[in-house]
Length: 493
Image: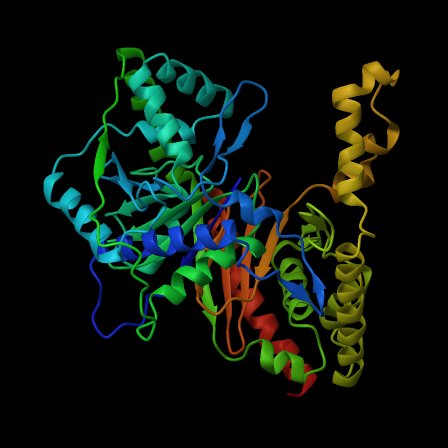
């Protein structure tokens, strides 16, 4: 699974070129990688409690490798020497060095020159070998293995794996709506198995396509923040060396059979893009600051609005997935809070019946907000149940026969349990100033992916679905906006 983030343009007096953006990003990524190696990244804390930082070691020089039945995640050992990024331009791949043999980082202007030379030299579209990362995983594994038969290709795949990140040049997006859609759906000049794939558009927008195997959204923002800080005009770049970096083109040996597979994947990719729909909106009437003044949790407030909108769009409340970071624990990832609740249902009923005064409705809002926050707290502190249940189910599926458990335990066949696990609305929230939009796909047939960003004075709403549900997505978006306004009016703030 991937999630995709589009950030605000760097606020600079002079708009940087695409090569300058790529050069500065490459420098910042190398510098942050060195800080992680040197232990200079301060532990993140919440109310004084440190969070697990293990995911930081997996940001760079890492990749998901397709295998039959089960993929492999690989991360290279720490090493400052001879690091590089992979630039994908017009479907051609280039290895651009960012540190020398002594581990010294090249100046961003020198890296920019090397990248600019690529842009000036490469004029024709190449074969999109990275397309194999869009295939179903067993098919991707087959193409990967076929590619590796050639030593040239095997070396290329190893170079991609060992690169700090992949930087993709998106020449198709003319505006932010197209940029966020193309992050998720456009397979040109992409390599989706790389943990961090940074995408730069011809209009100077920067996006991140994140492979979710080893990292979460709450941790990857550390990289986004560091890269953004590198663009601050008052930031003076440290000069580590005056040497110039080199770049090397990755040429591929592609058999007719592999080429046919890539052509078929190109057609599938075009079809897939037409099968999905993305709807984004920025609600600017108020944000987290005003919600807090209502004595309500901003996250709970959004989910109250979402449940109201869900009912008004579909006539019922279905299961809502909401991840909660559990990095208080060693190697903690996420728990699932399930944002649908009886407290929110009581609020929805009261609103729809139209027989309650605002003070009664506000009391229901407070109750729903407290219940939501308590559930988040329980999940964050290790008292969630869903990941535990999922783990037990996986133990049965993988080891049941050896354990003498001959059939799936009844709980996992229970209709209530299966209904709970059906992620009709798959949601994920964040609260980061520099993020413009965020999107990921729906996870069940007929479902919706909802990424929301709670800023001090605005709320970004991003909805994805299959094209067949696009009219419902438009209604859902409008109902969310209407519900946000309605709840604010009830709270009287």
